[in-house]
Image (cartoon, rainbow, N blue to C red; front, side, top):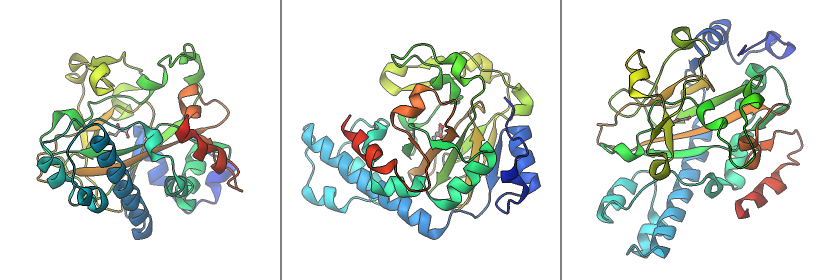
Length: 298
Ligand SMILES: O=C(O)CCC(=O)C(=O)O
């Protein structure tokens, strides 16, 4: 996959320097230091707090005995203690429709983020992809540690809409990964295999108990052939990688939850089904917003 063509978007850009663009091209990923503003981090944190409150409410409906004040007071700082006090209820990535709301729309259409997305995708005709996650990686908890995978391993799944493989051939997509705090290899940082190591190979998906966990990835045999590079980041940094870069979380052996948001931008013209379902086209007048907000009911 050719990543970045030097288009008119790139010529006058002040968002990424040549070295960053080159890294993205050559290695398939880049870390942009200190660019996620306090304001944006605050908006993301509010989204997480609301999401946690909804999750506790759902657990209560499912029969977990949860005091009302936990639901009204939960936030990213006290959630670990609440989860432990509740006896560590089963935790799985939530369907992203739990995150379809005004606040998330605002984050996904953040001027800075879409400016970079347009730049690296080389066009203004881009869409926000329908897979986006608020992630919570508990300390010493295998179930919330993502195995090393390529996002494309998921894109080619059938999803009841037929084989999507041919659609992704000329497709471009980038994931934007934003941790809410500093991350290092002891606290659930991302680790990646650079493209210089594997070219454009799409590895056959290995089943990490997909039915229960929702996880696919590279097989242990394949992994043993490659060197993973942990990406240490500070709060405010942004990691961008393309859809073929194998990535996963390091073990979190810190005492805290590792929180992160991942969102994706893709070319509208070639987007496969999975992106469309809960995704939306980025338009200048926000005309996609109303219709997108209704999707949480579907
Ligand atoms: O945050 C994680 O643990 C995994 C992130 C990921 O797999 C992604 O953003 O595609």
